[in-house]
Image 1 (cartoon, rainbow, N blue to C red):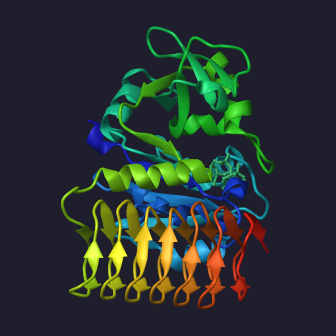
Image 2: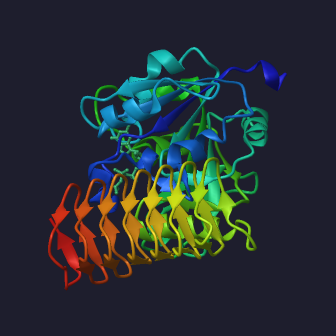
Length: 370
Ligand code: GTP
């Protein structure tokens, strides 16, 4: 019976991602790589084995970059875009895509910055059995004060939604940012304005309709700031093989390079002789590292070029960055997309270099380089 139900999904992907600036100035959150896969790829993993007709990306900020990189199909999944002239929040984009969503019984909504595993079939079963108007995926945390918390009854029906609670609550279950909704949710969302699903729509649904929770039991990350982005990367890298590197296709590793696991090396990466790479690092697609360079505890995005005898520790290097020979970068730096760092430059710890910057002088103090 369940097999006959047609499902569509809408991914909320239009936020400014201010907490991930300046990397999010040139890169939509869905294209942030976590352990070598983009957030979009992680989210689409939820849909692969299911009969999703269509995945709609609700976009605004940096929509063109996303469209250009993703196109209209990933594997067997059709990707379409719903472009907002103005950001419509977390609820407005659902109403905007009404014409596309209303012809199915249920649709799935996912925040574009959530990384988790979801047994979709079980969620759909629970949603259908309980005749819920909407089912909210829930994750349990020890400190819910930064999140939207739900109060539940014994049947896991949501009695109340509390955004970032100030007072102590008994519930530790938070809104995990994935929702299954019946099409009649659309009548509760106002048109043509910014709407917050969490603050405006869920409180109404929990009062007037059957709003249920669905408890997730796997790992869950909200990759919305640099602490959680780093944590998601390092946790997943550490879950990989401990004895050998995780190598993808066409990795070109010179004989005398040393790879220290856990480490992920994506497609077409080149690593020169006598370089020591790892542990706790990921090198994304098409990046090239010269001879005698040392990289550890670092997240290197795609298409990065690093010269010889460089030293990079505990740092995030954005896409298309060029780093010269003998460059030294201290811990907790963020080097944004398209930055160019000349030979012999030294960057102290905690430096944040903004996109397209050409660095010709050492940076001795932590802080922003604009
Ligand atoms: P911050 O500015 O750092 O808070 O990030 P954000 O703008 O992404 O906001 P938030 O983390 O609250 O957003 C949660 C999810 O909703 C993310 O996947 C966002 O991309 C998405 N989102 C937020 N605002 C909008 C919007 O106006 N339109 C669309 N389409 N998506 C949005």
